Image (cartoon, rainbow, N blue to C red; front, side, top):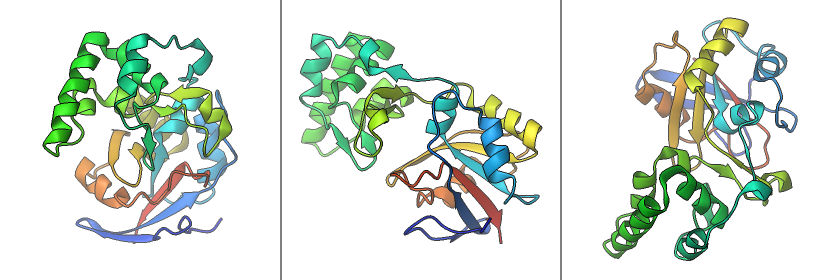
Length: 232
């Protein structure tokens, strides 16, 4: 296997902790309930060298965990329909709470009163040019919900994909079973977050974010959920 960058992405990045290559590893279209350890063994291990760090897209771990919300099981409330009319539906970073299903998820997680207050505060925030108030109030679980958006893969229009459960535990499990140091990330072209790392990783969260800040794995139809990081 060749150590190469994703389409239109840079292979190498300079950071405060040194220069790193980032290989985007393409897989098949991963389905609900697959084994993430088996996927790492099949796709990552042939390219891996001692000292490499594997970054995994959070969506793939949730799919493997069967941690999904089926659209036909969601009961959309009148409040969700009302509030979603005033919000952004989606942008290149993903789906927004302008989609009634994601708004309903916010209500299910936080309660209607808190979500209504968050929407009001967000409205006032827009008047003074402050963004992100709604998600700051309703939390990362809502911010991180994927799916309910069929434009890239039609099946994702029928499911919502929450953040993975126990990301630190998953990273340590992969490290224990494969020997590969692992981090789970939630990244797009606007933001990046570290959800969990295996205990052996010495780089800080800030240093890891520097390495992936340009979203080298992409987020469209590349099918590159694994990013192998190697220090030059």
